[in-house]
Amino acid sequence: MSYVIRSVRADEWPAAKELRLAALRDPVAHLAFLETYEEAAARPDSYWQERTAGAAEGADARQQIIAEGPDGQWVGTLTVLVEEPGTTDWAGFPVERKQGHVVGVFVRPEERGSGLTEVLFDAALEWAWGRGLERVRLIVHEENGRAQRFYRRAGFLPSGLTVPLGDARELEFVLERSSAGVPFSDR
Image 1 (cartoon, helix red, strand yellow):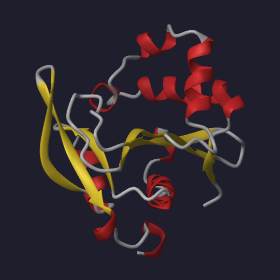
Image 2 (cartoon, rainbow, N blue to C red):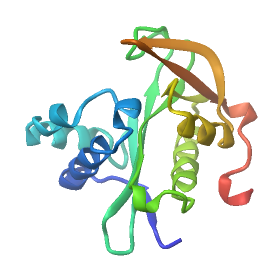
Image 3 (cartoon, one colour):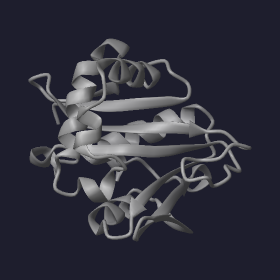
Image 4 (cartoon, rainbow, N blue to C red):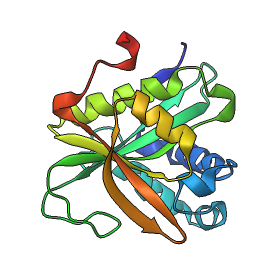
């Protein structure tokens, strides 16, 4: 694999914006993301600058990890948010332990099936465990079977928590640090 896997840098907001907009154009974006292409495209550059700086290399509260192809194009991404005990999450549920929350998972369609998502998840988990997080979780739409199958292969299991979202539900999947298996690259 000839990809570079790394954290974004604050000055790379134009590439972060382009990749997010590409993700929101994906045919299954309505199952994977909580905003629309139109909402994101209407945001000012200052929004993208702040968003990228807050998730850039060296940030403690969140980290955006990208896969850069041999030609320099960003071909995949995910972000890990750090959630602290005693706070509430985006859906209003209490956070009971220090944990990571994986969001914004996207790999360009032409790169899917290459093992890239596994490598991104390995990097995300390495970052999370390196910050002492006790578990990592993610929320997946009940109808997004492809994503659910991948998350199970990565070691994530349904917690039983469901988040109502309009007429549908989102399901929480978790991976406890104590049960984290070997990285995909070692399987």
